[in-house]
Amino acid sequence: MVSEAPPFWWTKADWRAWGLSPFSFLYGEIAGRRMARSHRASVPVPVICVGNFTVGGAGKTPTAIALARAAKEKGLKPGFLSRGYGGSIDVTTVVDPAHHRAEAVGDEALLLCRETLTVISRARVDGARKLVEEGVDVIIMDDGFQSARLTLDFALVVIDTVRGIGNGHLVPGGPVRAPLAEQMRQLSAILKVGSGTAADTLVRQAARAGKQVYVATLKPRPNTAVAGRALLAFAGIADPEKFYRTVKQVGGLIIGKRAFPDHHYFTEDEIADLLDDAARESLTLVTTAKDAVRLTGHHGRMEELAEAVRVVEVDMAFDDPQAPGKIIDTAIANFRERRIKEGAGRKT
Image 1 (cartoon, one colour):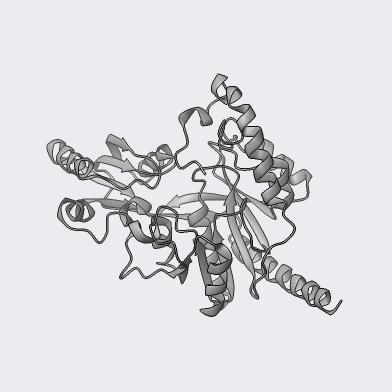
Image 2 (cartoon, rainbow, N blue to C red):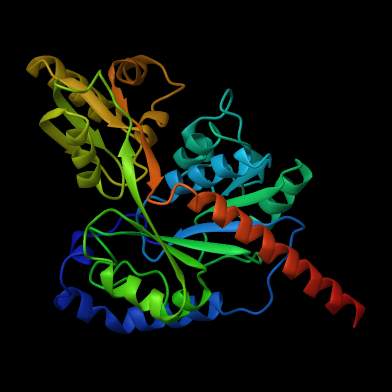
């Protein structure tokens, strides 16, 4: 999978997208067949996947956290399953925030483990089985919709309404991860995030196909350390502009910006530049929660940056506050139906 989305993916398709169309076709054939595989591993707890149509962020992690909170409100023990993207550990591992750094387990896993038990695994089937061993009642898988080798009881696909699916082309000519028809066939529901119009076509398509459509907004938490201050904002996420808009929502005054690739690990020179530029201009440094966890557990100037930076946290706020709970209930019902069918299949 491409780790950094080139800018032309998010504009109207041009000669670059069309020139890469033969490769996109081949990629789509492989991805579509992988998604359509009939044999998938089964685990004895409900599995919810939070994915998106495209490469890059759409709000999967805060969505997964919202679902975990809803599960806990129902008295369940949820567990997160992550691939540990960007981390060096290649064995199935229970994430321990007291001992693991982002370089080992990935930044998203460190965010998720603040909420509940989190397992990383390159092989998601092994990770799911580990979560079952740890006693979870429901597995929430962060990403992996297109490549899941697990039987999914609910697949929620998140789409950002500002960027949508970009130019609509498959990788490498665009950001789409697999043929849209196959993705639409396998998803259970769409979560439309924000008030833009870029997702309208897909939302209408989903509605015509009888798929549930939920609506939500990324809501920043009030932050008095940012409101009214002159800021140097930096972010290493898929869509830094989304973060800058969020900072403005909490009243921050962005004077300087620094954008880095998604999941970026900052070099000593980059850290020094951020600290020195902020000091010279009398600016407060501000970043995302995902960037902040990549700064923790270090020494020297990185530790200095971690202490100096202010973090803007966000939550996924569903228009229907009961929606996360409904998703949990539906996944459990689908799981029970699946287990009955599996039992019947074993008898025959």
